[in-house]
Picture 1 (cartoon, rainbow, N blue to C red):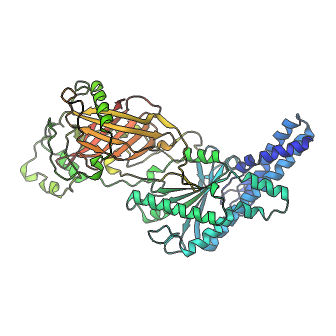
Picture 2 (tube, helix red, strand yellow; picture 1 turned 45 degrees about the vertical axis):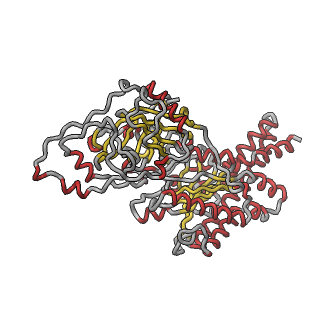
Picture 3 (cartoon, rainbow, N blue to C red; picture 1 turned 135 degrees about the vertical axis):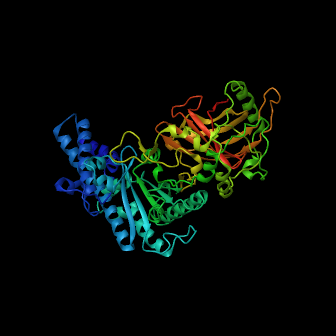
Length: 587
């Protein structure tokens, strides 16, 4: 009777064994231990052997508990656990081996990674250099396979389309067969084992992610990559994978694996990833731990010509008091702010005015006067060649200093968190060199789609909001202009943007004269969010509205009613200036 109970309990622990057997192929190493658990041959029995060890341990523990530490019960549990672990491990081994054969048959480039127990991803290369690869595999919760088509002229899809090529249909059919649990189970003659395999795999999740390089529009890249990921997901469903197990995402340019500055790097970034997780909980764990490799983001060229002009400008025009317009370009649709809540923003401005009186923040002073430049060497030619900065509506003066002379608050946020390497499984890792970090004028909006369920298209939610960043309004007065940012919301996972904010600027705001003003700037800016060791960088791209090029805010990761710092980068007479910006919660 005890042994029957052991069998039932072990069957319930099959999912745990499955998680312990998730491995990646292609590892390097020497010696009998490595050949047993970390063999570089993708058709080796790595997962089976690891599964046997994990299954034996689980079975022994279950046997000890149910058998009151009876040696016979412990032995029976160990034997049964070893059998189940070996069976599931053999399934994983077969899948790796079959995927390697598909890659060889169709001239595909495939790279494999393991998803560790904390959700971090370790590539084959990282595992091959590790001394604890076998330990990582024992507790792994899934694996990632990156697929690139090097044998066909146009990759997986028709040009600028989400339609699979005939060739791609062939190899994705073969890949679908590899992941088809029901088809694999048909090869198992023992009915009990077949049932256990199917039950253990019932909660498995597959996430299809489409990736692009960073050329072209980031929004269009995200949209196209989502449609392509969905097309592959639908194709896998047609080939027998249950739709309840499939998710898809358009990653666009947000998750590069190589430097976008070279064609070879851009080619590596154009890929489809198949992420296999052993359960719904482990899918959440993977998504919450995922980080982008920010060091591969390519910076927008800086305006060195315009900055050099500002650096030798004899005098800085004094801060305006009437916010006069210096350009008359038509306002963009985004700046029109259609459908915004005027009454709510007016209340925010009124409350902010009570907290931020003119005396609370000194008016930004003009930049120091530079030495007079002789007429013969004046940089008139450089100024003429400088491209015009984009502006729309009333060009406002926020004070501050030329960009070349300014200290940017974003640089104090520290290094950016990125994908964690093998040797940092607990603490976050940070990028040493991210050129887009300190200067928002060298960055651009980067868009990725949400993770969606194939069965109904619903967004998969994985995290709570960062404290204080759950739809609140933030405000501060800068050089007499009241700036309000509504609906600031950031998720704890990856510091992901939860919703688009609303930005309003009230030029030369005087609460005594007008408590229900009309904003001079009202828009929905695009936003990048970056998780860093010193906080969360919330970066808005304002497209020249009111002269503003971009706005950075550094928020505390643990909440707080006042931001750690920030900057407004704006155009004044076709030169870039920076003014400090440190908003506080306004409601």
